Image 1 (cartoon, rainbow, N blue to C red):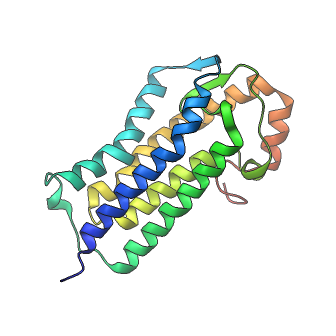
Image 2: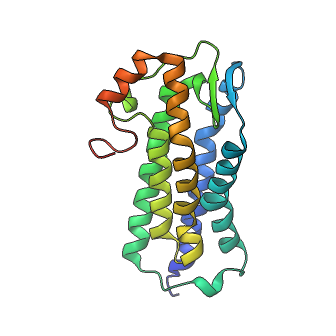
Length: 197
């Protein structure tokens, strides 16, 4: 029996999505029990969420479960697949650490919870947005793992759209809420990659 790299890549991606959903489930349930004090549902926020969901999830799912994007396939290599799987594992670890640090204050949108506290320890000690780091690593991992020019790179475009539309707005919201405390935090940390950016 010939080892099917494309099928293996698809299985890895599906297992990744399931694991990601499991990691998010409990924090999502817990955070919904805490009322929101600040909610942002602007058109830009909704658009960026749709773009990110399409790029990271729906477009790869179309490729995996249908033949609509098969014309954009290329030959997979075991090395690229291993690199991609490695990035996805790192992404899952980052998601776990971020959710654990945020606890009930986590939200998938630009929201602040009642009694919101600024988290600056653990994974938040060197970067302000480790959740975004996890999504970038996911998008990079998918680009290596999925041997399709559209499905593989859609996450970079989709999440990139969310990131660049949202991160400035999120930082302004945090400055408005936490003032000098957040500004001091910004001075000693990077946005998503320690010592880089």
